[in-house]
Image 1: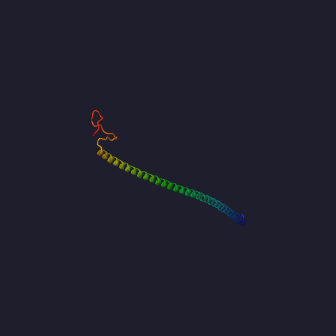
Image 2 (image 1 turned 135 degrees about the vertical axis):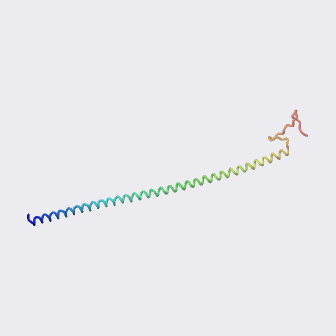
Image 3 (image 1 turned 45 degrees about the vertical axis):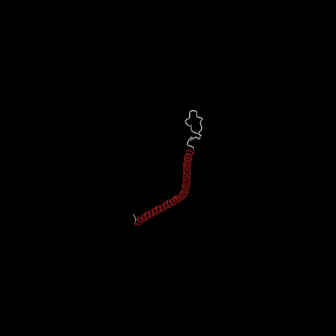
Length: 136
């Protein structure tokens, strides 16, 4: 074989190898571009989902805080009503005690004024068999 044929074969092989390398680089670049485009699209979707979830979380947080405030307000109202009821019960018990003391004083005064009168307001029997004798 002539030298020029060998050189031509080597040149053709080198050109074919260079073309194959270029094709592989182009395909690799296209694949990378597609992958990057896919990643960008996925990142956009993730950002959208993050915004939706953050808005939902903010809304739920606000509702939870409102619910907690309502519960605290209701508890304060219940405690206030309970304290008021306890105060009224103490006042009622104090009035009952005052009434009981006044009743005891009136009973004692009635006993002092008329020892022969029963607690029901009727005169006590004097031990006379006929039962009709009166005191003079």
